[in-house]
Image: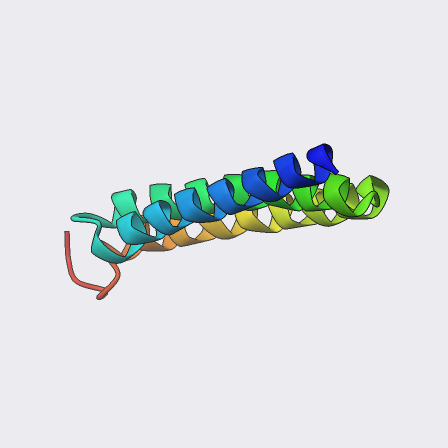
Length: 95
């Protein structure tokens, strides 16, 4: 029972830290701060998936999901960074 309580508290703590990263995404002064916040959320989501896998005792399933999510998050961040670098910002303005 104590391990279950520990994993639940870690999951809640990760969710709260993800909310702080979401604040950076929403109110970031530059687009690169927002991309960094998205990367942080992606990293924390991978750890949260692994914690949930340990909590439900199905780590093998959650590891596959976490790896897939990490790959998609990484590629998505690269695509957004290249797009914003080419267009000069999220509004498509000039540099």
